[in-house]
Length: 210
Image (cartoon, rainbow, N blue to C red; front, side, top):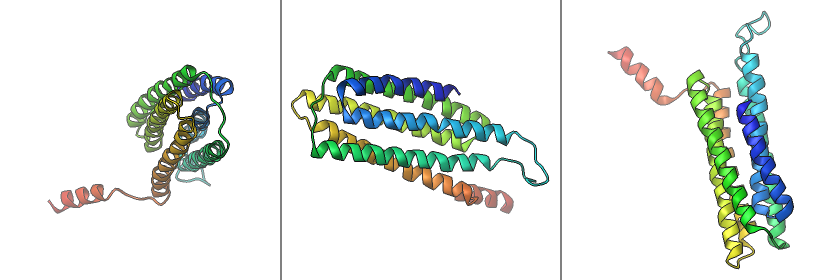
């Protein structure tokens, strides 16, 4: 709940500045921050379901709800990459003047601070309760924070006389989102397939052999 509110407020501040400035890099970052905020919803539901006791139909309980939430997280990340990429390419082909560069840079900084605070909180709580999904979502938020910093470089490039810096940074942010998607998809699929860390198996074998 806390991370949902924090990221929603961060994205809301950014969307106001996007409407005023028309910065596509900031728009891409804002879209991603909104999608990242929404990933807190299925995790919230999954944690609530996971506390329910086992039934005759679900004899192992509802722990797998967290894995289903992971699939929703993947879908949201993929959707944000598509939207950001399409808008960035459109602006590359049809450049649009950008105003209020100082506000754009400030919005990028706000995005970084908001995401980093959420990342620290999610990772700490995830490790405390033993939730790999929440830790991964925290690392995802930290990556989003660095993409927000990229908006600063886009605004700086435009200020120095390179108007295409904004959509170019938008494309770079899209690539960063796809990188996060690849890592998240790998982790979610491993959980769904009951994958085990090979180092954990090797350690167990060593203990048994002793």
